[in-house]
Structure formats: structure tokens, C-alpha cells
Image (cartoon, rainbow, N blue to C red; front, side):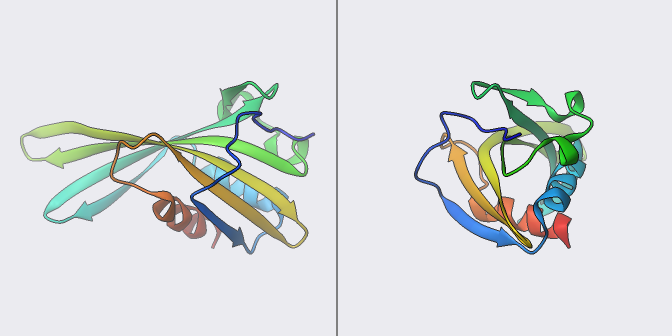
Length: 140
């Protein structure tokens, strides 16, 4: 069953391939849900919380927690909403910085998976290349 979002844009910010088959790529993406990454940006330390939702009934998104058999249930194509919440970590405390929201489509291309990424809105410091690096890191 395909899980696609009917309002996914026809123009996208970035298109790339993952060297993993579709089912395996879905497992890698699902493993990113509710995790975090820390990174340096200049002298600051940022914590990036990753949240993923998958398309449901072509009109909305559901958290990945509600679909435990994702890799076996979904075939051909899957659309995700990929949210990254950035928090600045300092000695005096944490401060929320921004929220980055991306739409991501993964399509089955046999031994590889093709990925399309579109950023929703203009807020946040991340772009589609940052999402590619996160996904490539998770799939290797």
C-alpha cells in the first residue's frame, strides 16, 4: 500500500538516491523517529530533535509510533513530514532556536530508493542538504 500525501509539491528542493532497497530505507528512516543529534554551529552547541510522521489517507500525517509494521505494510512510495526542533545548549540553560519542517518522499527504485525533499516555510537554519546528510548517515 502506498502512503502518499496529495498536496506533496511537484517541485522539490533536492532529489537524491539511497543505496538501500525500499524496505530497508524505511526501517532506517523509522529508526530516526524521536532521536536527537548534537552539532556545533560556530561556538554554539545545538541539539536537533527529529520527529517523523507518515502520510495517512492522502490528507494527513500520523506519528510513526502508530504504525509498528511500517516496512512490511508500505510499498512503492511513502511520504513523510520530517520535523527538526533545534535547541541551543548553553551553561545558563537551554533555549529553543527554531523548527525546520520538511516533506520527504521515498520511492522504490529496485535495489535503490529515490528521495525527494521539500522544505515547508522559510524558518530555521537547515535546508534539504542537511536532511540528505542525516539520511545518508542513518543508511550507512
